[in-house]
Length: 113
Length: 111
Image 1 (cartoon, rainbow over the protein chains, first blue to last red):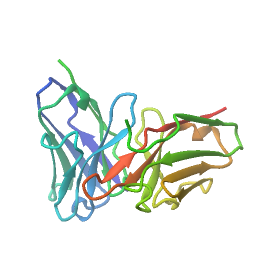
Image 2 (cartoon, chains in turn red, green):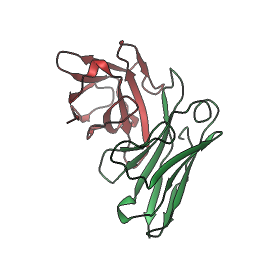
Image 3 (cartoon, rainbow over the protein chains, first blue to last red):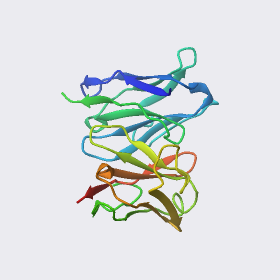
């Protein structure tokens, strides 16, 4: 059974940092391309970042230079390191496989003083 | 403002059919056959309903169908059921760097 379980969300002050994790079971992270997608409260979905099986990474303009996507193949886990956080980064963050065929349950990040 | 344009809401009675449109440009919807649709119930993660314009993942009822013409894609739900009431999002591949763009979402109400 495929499962994606995010963790690491919480309340952080503007300018702070946070690392999200997505533990995957049922398939191999490194054999797929993995994404982070976010959803601000009451708003729509926004693609954030992707890491391809070969290791190439891409980011939405809104997070470029502040967020870093990575994976640990030994732990079959995807990460999102977020720094210089802004109030507009407040959202539920989902990890999703390939063309978003499988999703995690999401983890809420709140950026507020 | 979302990259793809969807109607904010649509509605229909049980048993009827509804269509949700998704309009983009030649750089996304019109340029690739990689349009997908997601269903999201309140407080839940999105669920893939249609991929590659018109393909259905295993387990998705054949009441859900997708199509595309030019820069506009459509999701049609026939034989509406109460459990179809949800938000629906379209998504399109938009190239290596932009990767994927979403529509703003459409709230489907089953009357």
